[in-house]
Length: 492
Image (cartoon, rainbow, N blue to C red; front, top):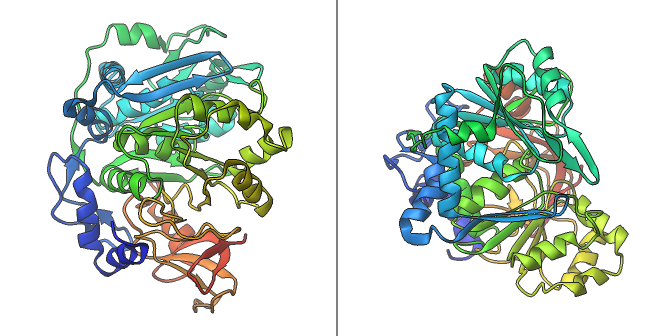
């Protein structure tokens, strides 16, 4: 790829050429001849003349390339004592079957499906099944209460809701069905049907508008991939606020697929046949991008983990998972490592597992405190890489791109802006501040592929929330500074 400086310069001096080149990593039904459509600025669109199917790129193309027997998804659940591996061929078949089930319920191109599920493979299968038939999924974190779920049902107006009978939090079994029933009762919009995955820990009693996942799939005809315009929405993901009308971040199909595929190699150094373990939840953007879509687009193996970093049954679970599944790259939140450190301050549990295959630890979600950074670095002897991004951006803004060129690490900094992200720091009047001086962290427009093009059914709020503070810039909502070496420090 060349050096970081070379790649970054190419992305800013000629973004059209840069991103069309990156788009060659994706299989298109109609390859784009243009990268950026700025005719509707500040509503930018990427690859406006392209057509593709994201599910085909995540699954079918790897099977057609002869890698159908490679593991695609590993389900690891210490809370149920379950390990299950899906090859690319098996996962494709499961997804095609559920996509067919959704289609038989009348779900088609552009229809919305809300997914309210625990960390089980069927959550990823439901997401990919929507992508397969051109439907738009909206995953709601399984820990949300009925009122928060109802707000999202009203905003997305789904034709179908996909859920499970229960989730598991540590030693507690949480019945999802009563929460879902209450949310539908509170919502003004009523979905036509709910599809329920029955889990043996607590099966649910189904009502008149409920369908059993297993029965539905058994009677379904597998569905093929439906090509859609690159600018079509792939999913809606609501930011985590619980007051007022939720903000539905829209993610497009083409830009997201290109950016994620590019980031897997450039940022995380994960390629076909290698394993990435992301300790997050599919209800958050990290789960969307780097449990489900990113690793599969890259032809890698992804680990879907159901459990907490500690207490399931001990603080060594992340080490066990990384060792057992030969993860090359691990990605989680600093909070998880603080919990592990509190339970096992000397890191003695790492000695019980072979971690020689682990090359990188990436952390994001909140600022990485120096104590946790130094503890993890000394314990693992590998790069511990802070990086910074948001639900809105879909993939990292600032990181250490080890797949391009590893930069020296600075505790407290997520390193430098990635190619495609023109990051600046401005004062209250909109003027650039000198190196080392704190101000508002902004990104010069247009945002790169993969970032939100707008909010769901709310262009005005998109502009008001993100684009109105500084003309020509996206407001991240975070403050900090950039030092003399170009390193970004996110301070608050």
